[in-house]
Amino acid sequence: MDMDLKDFMEFVQTTARSVGAEISSPWFYLQFGLILTAAGIAYAAEAAIRSRVDLTSLAMRWPLPLRHFVRVMVASASTAVFTLLVIVSRVAMYHATWPSRSYLLMVAAKLGFAWLVIRLVTSVLRNAFIVKLVSITAWFVAALSIVGQLDATVDLLDSFAIVLGGLRLTPLLALKAGALLLIALWLTNIASNFAESRINSTTDLTPSVQVLLVKIIPGIILLADKSVKPGDLVTIGDNTGRISAMKTRYISVAAGDGREFLVPNEDLVTQKVVNWTYTDKNTLVKIAFGTNYDADPKLVCKLAAETAEAHPRAQKGKPPTCLLTEFAEAGMKFSLTFWIADPDGMDKVKSDVMLELWDAFKREGIRVPYPVREIRIRGGALPVETAVEVPN
Image 1 (cartoon, one colour):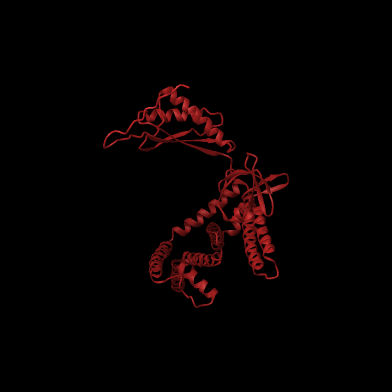
Image 2: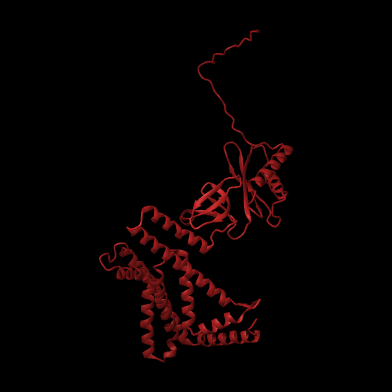
């Protein structure tokens, strides 16, 4: 590592002394009380505004940019009111006493204003996860800049390094790479939507050419974000198989029984896809079964767990679990779960465990439930026909 442990400890000690000096001042508690008061008033104001303002019809006749700005401000009413109150308190204390005695109020006001700007900028994004990630990251960077610790934090993140074959890997480099990747995917999505709208509005292209061009955009997205890749085991609708090839218009999924499905790329972008090997190949196998009420449920769970654990593909570090799930009309219902290291052949594993469990039940005299029908006849007996066999 580039940074010496002694330098790091000196940095921590300096920061601790600075924070301790600030907290020991009586002006700190006055500022903190004003901040809490502003937060309480802001919370009450937001509740009152939200109960009286309809965001759907708000500023409907105004220009789109102004309407969007107003709606964001109303949605962030608590932050806006809090920031305004803290700014007023900061100005009052600045003129009534030394500027250093209202430093905490200045920091709180800047942080509130930074959050308003971030909310306004990220309001154009559609993905909720991306909005939260970008908002928190941007606010954290702004907070470090406001308190004057951004450069020190950047130097600290860049000081821890691992050198691999001439490549210097640092936490700062990883954060920058992640930010660039998010920006690239966001810009790709914007470009895709823009290109699709332009293609569909062009009258010089035939409908078939428009469809062809629009279908090439999802392929580029899939190739860029790597959400699916060749070799992944996926479930799309009722079809399960491994991705054998990826094209700009479709992917090929081999089902394992000789069939091969060609799935359009836009289906992967717009529909639910189960990727069994996206992060790791560990797969949870679930087996549902039942027994009659003559069986001991504790013994049933013990036999089921031992049977699953004995399978050669069951992971030893994750013991199987058997649960009694329901007292049904026909008998007791159980759920057996255990982990295997790879989803390939999962149905074969389930079949093997169920066959072994059947043998275990036979040895212990445990029976599985089956439907019993009782027929009651009212109003007399049914006529019985007698069949007589006549020899040839």
